[in-house]
Image 1 (cartoon, rainbow, N blue to C red):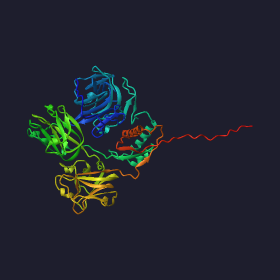
Image 2: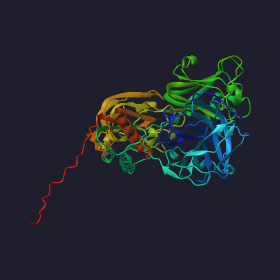
Image 3: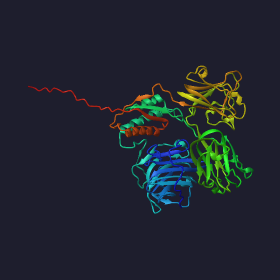
Image 4: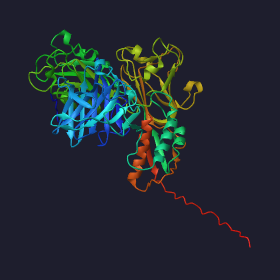
Amino acid sequence: MAYVNITFHDKVTRDSCKKDKACFSTPASCDPSTSNSCFFASTRGVNGSPDNLTFELSGESNGYIAVGLSQDNKEGDGDTIYSCANNNGVPKFIRATLNNNILTPDNSFGPGSFRGSVNNAKIQCIFIAAGLNSSTRAANTGAFLFFFTGNFTNGNMGSPVTRMATNSSVDLTNINSSDVAILTPTTNTGSNTTTSTTTTAKPATGGSNTLQHMASQGAALIQTNKSRKNQEVNMRVFFRSLALLLGFFSAQMKADEKEVNAAGWGSASQSSTHSDPWSAPNALDLRPSTCTHTLIQSTPWWKLDLLKVYSVNRVAVTNRPDCCGERINGAEIRIGNVSSDIFSNPVCAVISSIPTGASDSYLCNRMVGRYVIVVIPGNDKVLTLCEVEVYGVYPGNLAAGRSVTQSSTFNSWIAEQAIDFIPGFTKPESACSSTVSQANPWWRLDLRHIYRVSKVVITNRLDCCWERIDGAEIRIGNSLENNGNNNPICDVISSIPAGVSSTYVCNNMEGRYVNLIIPGDSRILTLCEVEVYGEGPCLKQTFVKMKLKASLSLSEAEARVRLLSQLESTLAGRGISNVTLRWSQLPKQEVMRKQAAPAQCVHTKR
């Protein structure tokens, strides 16, 4: 049984690794969208189905690529294999069982939402694998993961060749399972043992083994200085640990980014409603069993007002579980800022089909907009949605994951809720910060390093009391005198309407601390979201000379690029992925000549 689709829009890439999916690859941290020598697999959980997984596979093979799941580190013994085969230029899905290095296809199994492509020898596919349980040796979502390739001739699968395997059982729904130690076999036999080597930041081409060893040491030193889950590199230790290469580098931290489902914070409407149980908000209640339903009409639509503008990274749609799954075919997902004319908003994706009861995710690549619309063009159409999730990001927000405090706390309105990416439009008590009534209430953000702050964005509460923010001062600086409230003023908030996000320009003020304070007696400071944007960290010394003892020539631009890429790959393999390296001065070669030993006089007896 073949499930085919020659092309698909969701290209398999490293995008969203460690954000909403776990990724496994060899060479380490390779990108399947740009490299033909990259073997790549990613997994993510399916909402509402804890034992279901969405797989993405990519690799080069003249036959098939496959992922295998096992409760132990042995290949075979009835392990489940999910494969994508090149069937005369058309992608084909095959589930099989592996025993004694022989694959036995199971043609009764159909994946959810299979999409694939074949481009010469490169195969990519995306699918949902259902029914993972102990009988399949996949142990729910925890398993050893193997990646195979093999021949595919006249519909027959050849013996699998192992390309990579995890060295331990991993939770395939946990994004932090990404970049675990990967084993790449040097031989492949029919036995249950695998001869392998660890491939953490393997050099792209032949070169200096000394470089890899030294770079790995540097990465290990940095890793010991991680201070939180989204690690922040101690820059001084970073420079010291990398002082091994010849040339000059500059390093820049990347702000943490977090993908959040913003759909539940907005309000939904639709072009018509079949009856009361099928209302528009049903698509936002996180219950796939309750759905929306329009009447039969021309161009039915469903619209979500997010109440503020977001950078939308992806949209996930769940189809109805009982019947009529084909009704969703051809629906357009549009994102923009025009409420009155839905077709004025750009298209993120077109839904070709979604299996009954399944969920599909559509990449929107940070399209900016307040409104998310799902519409089916045409006559005599019905639109039914059982769940819509809209995942937005705050690119470059320096406040993400930082330390915060405030002068006092009212009930559950803790300081951290002002930087949790949730604007609190529906339940402010669990999404906004608030002090008690007091004199000069304040809230403080610690950026941990000095940054040049370009702007601060404040979101006010929607439910009531929005006038309480009036007169608040935004202060930025490096002093903790008076709890940081004596630092220079960026701006004074005259007022912010209910539920609105207002931007205050700070003209690259330098500082580690961002404070908000309302001067006066009997005042209450409530913040539903604080975003901080800028550049940095600002370092007194951002350039460092590094020396490499190796025969590698850096006179060619390609070699210099390859060296930086290798070093970044090594760091990424060690979990340090928020650093960018670049040459600021071309390297110079030193030729070390061995000095001749001084002449020795030979004394002979006369």
